[in-house]
Image (cartoon, rainbow, N blue to C red; front, side):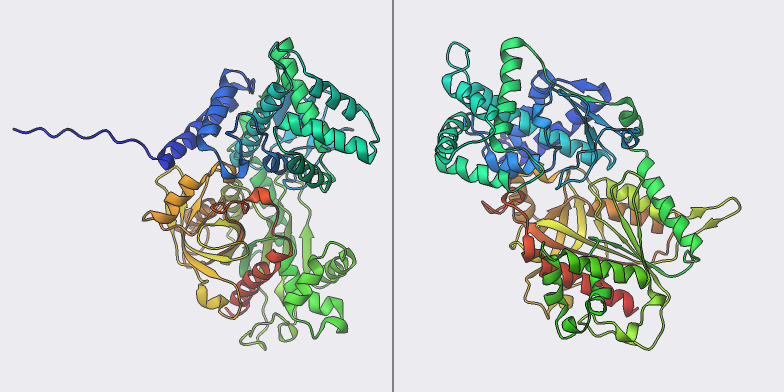
Length: 565
């Protein structure tokens, strides 16, 4: 009898990367349970090794032992609190009362959360968005410490003493004012420590200067290097820890329940709880602007298209126009609920009975304009990763009073989001047919009320197919993404919330029977980046005004679907 031996198969880069993502995720859960770790100790090194095995596109030259990744540093510092590079001790906490203290909150511009600088050496970061947010921050910190180690090594000579370049950088950081000549000398020293060219360093310095809520590149690199050197030479360890309250509350929907209860309390108080309800997960401006902007801005804007108005409203200097629309909307049936739950998800509630549908200008045809509507629209800001399940799950549960349970009369759920695209470019539109949850066997096919036909009147490219819900956008590389694109998955893009939203919807509609099983679903994403193209990752910068057209095209189609029901 002939025995055939199976040939040894070398794992592909995609398989190695996917295994590293799972390993890193497990390691982060372990560290969270343990309570603390040293970022360049044994546990921290395991995290760094996994991150290097993944070699994410968003972190560029992370695998290079000498060259510091400057675009990646800018990306993470825009999402971490200002001054974190100066802190030896970083503690992740839940909402624990600091918001009522005299500590001034530090709020990063690109990932809004409360952070508190307790003293010269300790920073607290408030985590209320769930597990995905914790793992996202830990990934950014792992990258930050890895790049700090590069600066530290470049600052030491072969006798483990600080070199002249480092000493000169220290003098520069201590100098408040630099002449143009001194500035160029400073750039020369800094470029040596970063392992970058003079031009690359100058460009990065200017990029950091444009962000008003982070420190300048000189200061950041000095402090990253200083703490790394002190740990190497003086054994003065850095540490990341997690509060007891955070470890106890994570995964228990503490903040999502408070958030959803606030919404339902308002609906009950205004006698809106029984009306047909449409939930929209989107930004806090596009729905409001579609419904109110033309009337709010007056005759000058009546002849302009919605897209032209949206472009003007999106210009940073036109705050007065945005204030005018907000003031008009608040008088015309919209209520903005301030979020004090900790979720950082503001909410708008719009009573359609207060709108004159016949006068509504959406740049779309609305059938049956003469029929009055008393539907309610709930607009919730973007959730983050696992937080999407927590908030949607809690929102769809019945309102539990003392004597009965009142079900939400949910007619449609509409999700608009930003996502990385795999088949097109920035600003294109993706229509998902299913959500595939990375690293698991979970997949969520569904019937999407939106299709390519909805966007034929636009000049935008539209792609339809499955989308991958990833564990973290900063944990993806070209090998993994190429696998999702070219394998039988034929994925069109990646995002972080879709599978979590759909899981909550299916639980509510098919298991708990909290909402109708016939609830209408509309999902659409616009491309914020293409991680398969060099220079087009999230670290390359935001879409800016290029995101206006797809944002309002999707919002218009969602509203058209709601108003034509």
